[in-house]
Length: 100
Image (cartoon, rainbow, N blue to C red; front, top):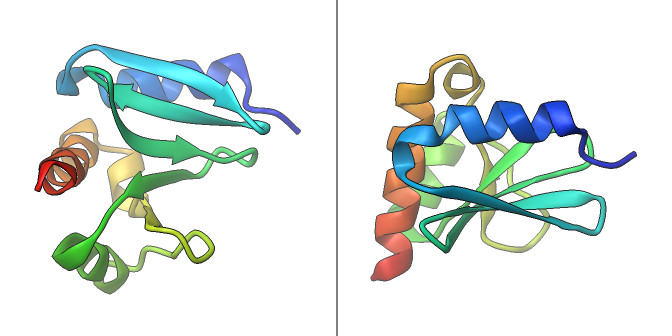
């Protein structure tokens, strides 16, 4: 199963206040960039994983997020999927920590 056009539209809208959102399909999933900075992945099943490290990774796990394999990605908390403000707050943190 590949990421659908509906999934792409939903995620682009969810994160629209981050800046210019661009997407790239990759291995059945999708990479999400905000102003050309990779911040998240969307898997084949439509689950969003933020690119994280450090304290953010721990905070997401404490909020009930799941780890994506052994790499530095965690699921976006379920509450954030219904609230663009919450989703973008988590994503902004991911983008800030990526700069450090």
